[in-house]
Length: 193
Image 1 (cartoon, rainbow, N blue to C red):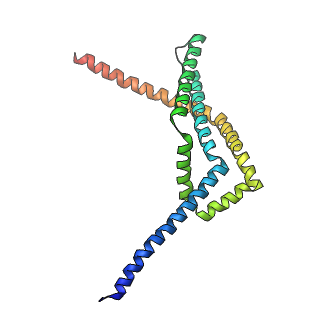
Image 2: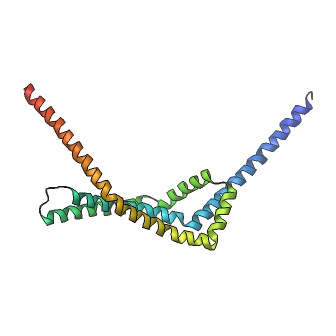
Image 3: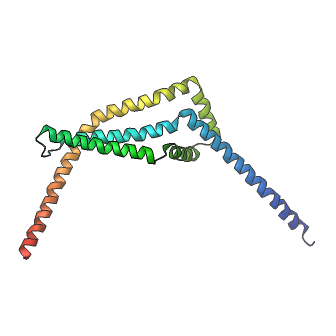
């Protein structure tokens, strides 16, 4: 053999790559297991679905409020009640179908895994697990949904009326512009004939 050094290097590389790949796979498996433990410990999948369902309920409530604030030609109380019942039925159907057709746990696990994997190292995930197993970590897990819910309700109560007012003002202005454009198009059509 003319180049024993090259031959030894090739043989060494042939054995080194599989060992390195196995070590990398083991590190990925460890991180995946740690992330799964963290997800279970924090009950993140439960919170994920709950947040989605609450957002549907928020949308229903906001839509009802917007309809109540609108100047709709609904003089009769029964007409408004019928409209509200229709909206409630629509949102109930959406919520039911979404619950049946979407596996929130699978998506939550996928998204949470990707997010934790992107933002935390193995050692940081281990530290998070230790923290969430501690008494203060357990308190954080119990209190955080309440804190977020309370702050969301407070912000909604204070900000939603302002947002609805701005939305109505802009919608009214835009509708006037649309009507002007429509009228000018209609006028052009009648003058062409």
